[in-house]
Image 1 (cartoon, rainbow, N blue to C red):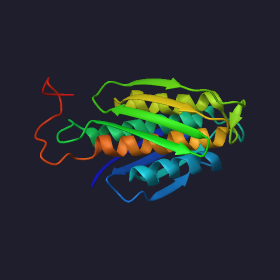
Image 2 (cartoon, rainbow, N blue to C red; image 1 turned 90 degrees about the horizontal axis):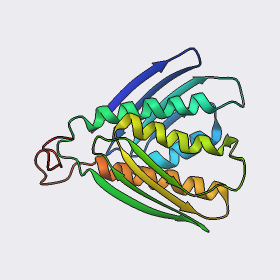
Image 3 (spheres, rainbow, N blue to C red; image 1 turned 180 degrees about the horizontal axis):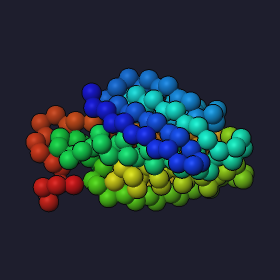
Image 4 (tube, helix red, strand yellow; image 1 turned 30 degrees about the horizontal axis):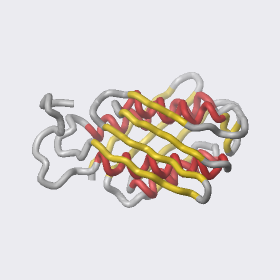
Length: 193
């Protein structure tokens, strides 16, 4: 199994992340934000990503920097897992329904960070997290991991939409970073990611 670890300590937050790909989806999460832990657990479990995340900082109810910094550190840890990209599948996608909601995620772990996020949440927050912070979390992961992700979602229940996104992202990410049997070298016509 391949793992990446990273820490980030600022005046606002203190974050430690370890991620292992092609694991069992075992998660040990302590962010202090129950809904965020729930979403990260869904992502890890369905993507076979073993996640250990400890995050402290920011006053209660103000989650922007903590969630952003978890994304930064998780992205940096994933970048270490990707390394040169030798043998990884690189491209993957997932379509996940959750009752009336559906999320689609396509990922390219090709070294270029980019996020397209299409869909709307109905309320100002989801599980106590401001809705714009959900998108910003995925942006922070993608930019710091060197992953391009296209995320689209529909539905009427914000919890269902958000959970479908995290599950789809986890599944696509786990597949993109898995070792592809028979693949030699880096999956790129350039010879490097």
